Amino acid sequence: MQVVINCAILKGLKYNQATPTFHQWRDSRQVYGLNFGSKEEADSFAHAMFAALDVLTSKLVVVLIMFLWPPLQ
Image (cartoon, rainbow, N blue to C red):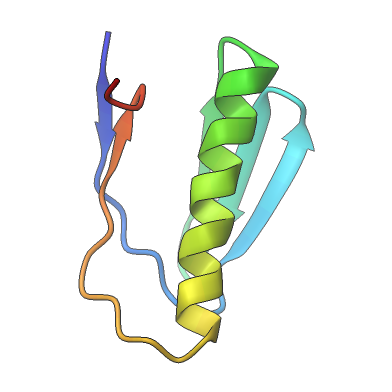
């Protein structure tokens, strides 16, 4: 099964690893959450999210970031 999340990742977005398998994030208008089947999947997603946030805070321009879940092999 593959899930596509198309969500704007804006500077200032707050990402929280609420539990090892449930992560949530919020922007100025909405709260989002994902429950993962394993800690490894959650860690992989968190790594990608933190990398995207690092790009935004480094003042590089990002037009669109789309996550494919699970990652393509």
